[in-house]
Length: 238
Image 1 (tube, rainbow, N blue to C red):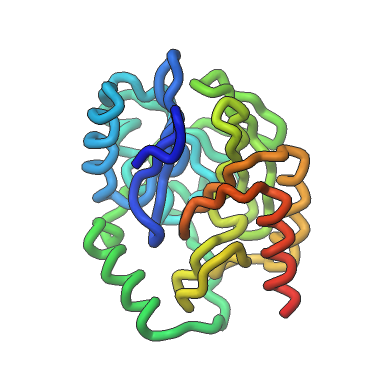
Image 2: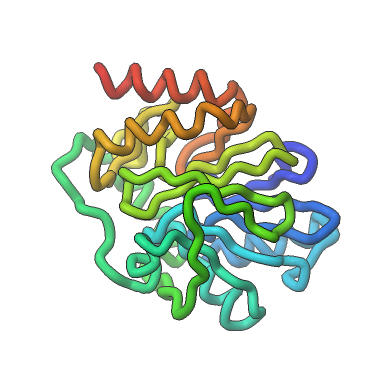
């Protein structure tokens, strides 16, 4: 799905990944679920691209619903996968998020589980090798993505700023659709290790001034990063 010139989304409002397309090739940000590999191939085809044009995958964190097809790209196509070292163990099959007691509604939870199973979420392949990235790094990948440290959801959560598409990719630093309750709009993400720290990290997004705020779950937000952060803070205070 094309969101804007050079900016594409895979998946849906349940689980999403993103592509940045430039003259130098394609950068993939998050890798969704294993079944999204088909979506990746199909979207590349609509862009006039192929897997050979993918230069790198950046993971916003190491949760199983974000590593999806990353190992397949690395193993079969030699595509490097970048992740913060504090989440590398999680991406390689280590402990997943702390599942603290959280509000939920049966319908949205079932939809999340069914969608995850249909997209191969029960057979995600852990990474065997990763490349470390840290806060402030600018990667030599299409779009010159810059890494923004966002600890809270997980120790090594990051956002990815790509000025060429006026976007910041936030993973689970915030969500626009809570997969446990079905509530929409910018809000704190569930399954967050340290909720207070995650809220504090949101201020790191503000200097980007990005128009697009692109989460791993929920609809793309084009109302600007400042308004998205204010909405999350207001929801958290309720």
